[in-house]
Length: 107
Picture 1: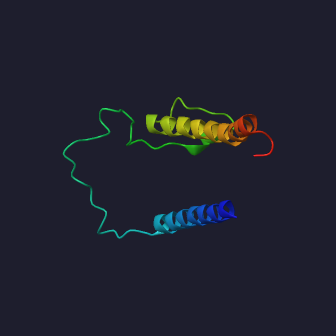
Picture 2: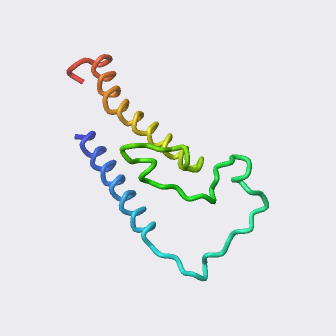
Picture 3: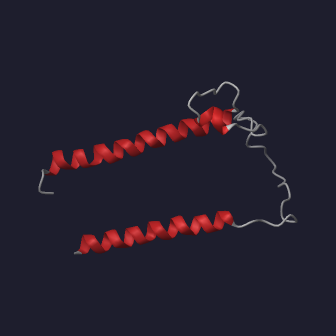
């Protein structure tokens, strides 16, 4: 019974976080507040991510991928997307498989 309560609390937390961030990102900002911050250092200069260039989503995620003309930040986010997908798949398959091997079918 305790694990059911823990699962319900975890599910409610995930739901609250997912819906809470969705409404926060959907809020529009005022035009007066959009001022460029004055940073003492430029964080994007040493990484060479080409942050001033636009990316084309069809070239990145389309059926025929063309990453040559895309900026470095788009390539990095695409690599993180692939890595996250692989990690989710390993967690989805590997976790229950490990649990079955270590604890047996009655766990």
